[in-house]
Image (cartoon, rainbow, N blue to C red):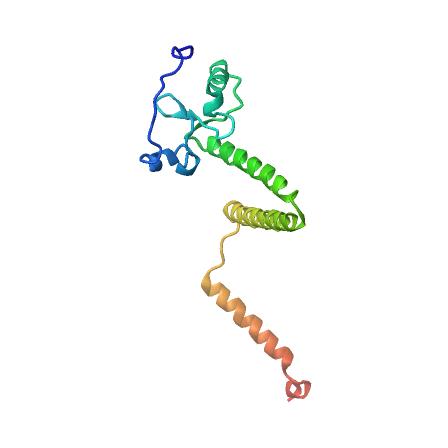
Length: 169
């Protein structure tokens, strides 16, 4: 009753509404969960670690005061980037704890980190090449010009391969 002025409380069947709850990053395997919405579901708070049922009153007080460590999410792209960053940081902490269990786990974690870095590097390389293609002032070479250039190159290579006595004849 202490927070009734600031919040309207309700219960939702997260299994029956699992597809809709996926929009708010809530999966059936992580239930029960707390979801705080604002502005007719245009913004929301959810955090499997920081916003829990056993400490709900404290979490809600932090949201009301504006000092909550829980990420306020919305449907804008920047909010999605912040969400994925938060999840990447959580994964990094989990992976660090997993790697400390033993040498086998350390090897697995190292391979995972290396694979992730290679994947990120490949994605960045693709983005750079796409950006270069977009901002390039060069006109692409036509197919006819390409064929002429390749024929001339092939003829020059064939001329270099001819024996010296054939050139004199």
